[in-house]
Image (tube, rainbow, N blue to C red):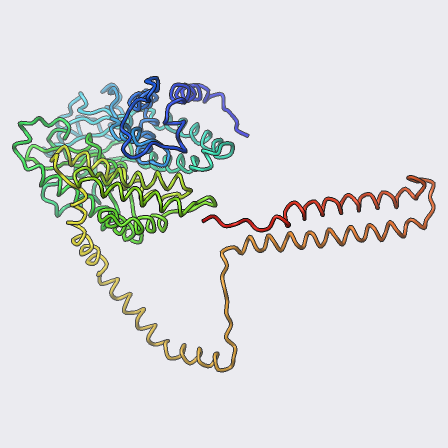
Length: 558
């Protein structure tokens, strides 16, 4: 039973108002029947439905936790319609700045020195203010220009309370609603909790900047801000200052000064390398985090949200992207099933049929119309509708590809990510091979080969001796072991019930010979009670047999 804590009542009210305002819109109504890939109509046909943009605006009003939740939901095509995903990807994390005096106190507390001792110059006016913190321009004592990100005061307490509310609601939805069980909303909230906690730790973000900066050092047109470790703590992040402007603020005249196609292609190739070779990638490349520097390079900012992919998953994602770009529907469906988790209601035939229709629709489009990110989101949507839980890596990759597509179009309207995948895949596979061919991996393989070769003769002799003596045993594994054991348990229970009923009947028959003062219908009362219990038990057992066993096994779903 859900317990509503009184301290959370104001937040329950806010969430209730959100549901009341948007409950009639497709964001909630169509969780099980989401609009198709190309439904870009922001308003319902009757004109009364709140628009996706209004939903995004309401999330922004509810504060930092719900802004971040919206960013996470922008990759969940199994939960939200396509037009809402599109609106959420444009969610701008902009807030009013907090007073400089508070920022100064936090910096001095975290660094342990006065602001004037740590910095030669420090601009009290922030250059950017978001839900979790704000950024100030500064100059270190050694003359280096830096950007200092300061976490908002009290933000941890506010987010902790919001997360507690969301966890309560997620658990309630999973326990009491079909939508909650189908989409595992408690798991969604738990994953969001982990992501947000990591993003609140600026030391972790500093580590992400170092790792991704090293991964992209061979890309001449890309710059990654690097942390200044001596001036970085959990609540303060000091990093190199990248001079430039947001990619969305470029005017047509400035675009003539650089080759947008080259920048777009290098950015896309960089993200393919991060995702499919390095296993760690910037998971939030929305236009607000991408700068064009003063020397016309791409600057990557805000590494609080990163994705991590295991080597095994990387190989499957490479195959999936290739299958999509080449229009191989069967392979797309098979790989999606391999990297996902199924439930008891998974309809594989329905899933494969819908994927086939999607790929066929893709083939009818021109290359410039194809959006790999939206296509991956649509694969996730179809999976959610047919009982398949796609891996979180796929949802993050789809969101990243969707944002990269938008950035690529800002740099070069004719840029085609689909062709870029096919063009760069050979280089990606080569890099993966080179990464795997390390001395450690080679020596490990040699040792395993040596051990296998040394033990092979003795194993062959043992196998042949076993066959010769007729001692070969065949062991089989059955995925339905638990179901079979449950069936055996039911059989044993019925046998035991039958024996107890038989004993009651025999005992009652013997008691009939003993005359007592207590009688029922003229017969000994205790004996009659035993007979009635036996009759009731027998009737229940027969009803159970006729109600279940005689129906026969259920036909498997096609």
